[in-house]
Length: 159
Image 1 (cartoon, rainbow, N blue to C red):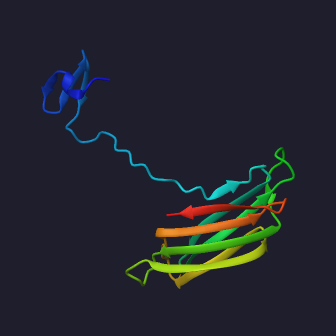
Image 2: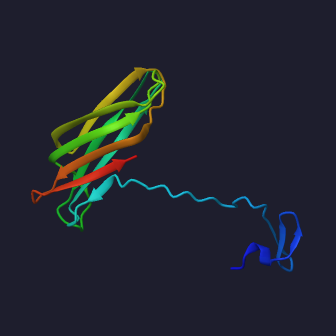
Image 3: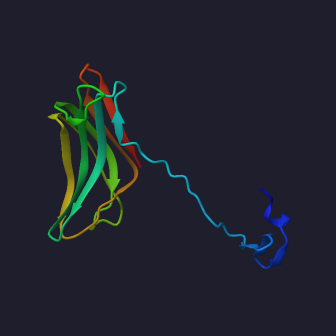
C-alpha cells in the first residue's frame, strides 16, 4: 500500500487513488481501533469436563436495584455430552470497586465466600429505585470450582 502523499491531491482532503476512485481524508483517523483486553470470565478444565465462570452482576427494577458477584460451575461426564449444573465445592473472592447512586466516588468492596453446589451468589449492595451500578477499575474477581479429580479451576475477572 502506498503512502497517502504518493497519490495526486485534487483539493484539501481529496486524493485520486485511480481514475474514478477518490479518497477523502483530512488527516484524522478514518477508523480508530483501541485494543481493550477482554476478560475471560469462563474457563474450561484441560480435560474438558468442568467449566467455571466468575462475574459481576447487576439487577434493576422500578422498586429495587442491586449488584454483586458470583461463581457458577458446570460439569459433564465426557466431552461428547453437554454441560449441566455442577454439584461441587466453590470459592469466590473479590476485591472490587463499583459506583452507587449516593456516592460520588466508586465504592470499594472485598470479601470471600465458599460453598457447595453449582452457584455462589453474593449481593454486595442494594437500594430503592431504578439505578445502574457498574464495575469500576481496579477490580478483581476470582471464582474457583473443584473438578471431578480433586483439582481446582479458576476464572478471573479483571477490570
